[in-house]
Image (cartoon, protein in one colour):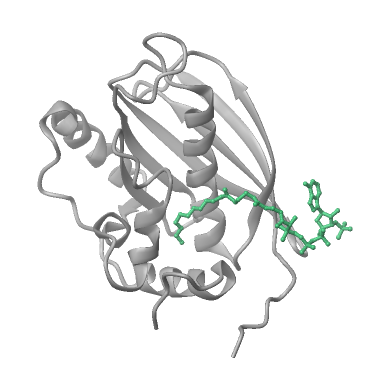
Length: 195
Ligand SMILES: CCCCCCCCCCCC(=O)SCCNC(=O)CCNC(=O)[C@H](O)C(C)(C)COP(=O)(O)OP(=O)(O)OC[C@H]1O[C@@H](n2cnc3c(N)ncnc32)[C@H](O)[C@@H]1OP(=O)(O)O
């Protein structure tokens, strides 16, 4: 099936199935500017029960649609996606480059929100039926320096019918909090595919 222009309600279950088949695998190399830090942090995340979703990073086959994703295809944001099967929490281990600037030297608040939204959306989509963000409240706690590694964590809090409340945090690898968010997702009414 070509997933490229299909409605998200139709294509996302394919992504989820494809991702379920993935095995944990540590990528062998990253670009030089953040390779060492990623290699240092990844084992700690694996110890916390997260595994790497390599297929999303490869963006092939049924997942090619993901290659149009605003955050994951951004040339100055590099993401390794991890998920914990136990509770469905998702981590984006991300390097934020130089062209994501808001205040001089720091990350744009919209980019911070986009990263949080994307990570939390992945947690929601990989844990249940397709749903869309309808509300997002971001608390910015500390400016995020450009050219730095951040950890973004997304988790589902509760689902009630078509509505899901989920949360996210962005923090420095040492644990210092940059931003946190609460989001509301709504599962759209069933969309009938056009024949
Ligand atoms: C896998 C790899 C991943 C890989 C990674 C992929 C990550 C992708 C990340 C993308 C995340 C995004 O940016 S998503 C894009 C931004 N979001 C959007 O564009 C969504 C735009 N909104 C919509 O299209 C619509 O609101 C829908 C389809 C979501 C819902 O419409 P609907 O189906 O008609 O539902 P409706 O009856 O209006 O509402 C249902 C219930 O939700 C409530 N509700 C609806 N909207 C709101 C709201 N803004 N705030 C509060 N509550 C709301 C209603 O009051 C109602 O409650 P009650 O009366 O039942 O109690």
